[in-house]
Structures are given as structure tokens and as C-alpha cells.
Length: 142
Image (cartoon, rainbow, N blue to C red):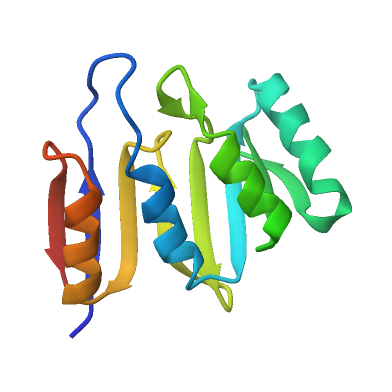
């Protein structure tokens, strides 16, 4: 049976560990073929950093105060995500949506404090719970 799973980490102290983020993202990136990254338009340095990484391979648009990068999953993008993730103990990107065949399967939002998995089974949920901090709250529903 498949479920939808929303889980979040309460806002906490500075310099918290984000050790769970890479294994969590890798788990769902293995199932995805497309990545969509949202950054606030006011984060010019981050947007310029992203633009220098994606070249013409990603569609870049602006909507509701966000700069949005959309494109296929590439080795270069995965390397960038996994080697440049922390900024002031937060995940630097406001939202990352992982898709398969244009259907959302997972999102990391609010700079890595809130997550949503659209179609997960008990095995997936067990894995997620095993790597997330103890303070994480989970809401599973059909």
C-alpha cells in the first residue's frame, strides 16, 4: 500500500546537523528524472551561483518572488547539490522538487525543514524514519 508522507523538523538552534539530508535526497533522486529548485529572488549570490552551474541545461524562470530552475537530473547537478548544501546550518535552497515523468515524487522545502513524499510504502517510511532526527514529526495518510 502506498501513502503520502509529510514530515518536518521544528525550527531549532543554530549550527544543527544536516547529516540526514544527503541520504534522504539520494534515496528519492534515485527514483527521479527531473529536478526543480526554487530560490528567493532576493538571494542574488545564490541565483548567480546556480546560473553558473546549470548553463543552458535548465529552464530558468521567475514567479511569485522565486527564481525557479527546472531540468533533467544530471551528474553535475547532483554533485553541486551534495557538495554545496549548507548555509548557516540550513539547506541553502528554499525548495527542491524531485519529479519522475513530470509527476512530483518528493520535495525538500523551507530550507530543508519540511518534506513531502507523494507515493511511499512502509519500507520507504522505515528508511526515512531511520535517518531523520528524533525531533522530526511525521504525518502519514492515504
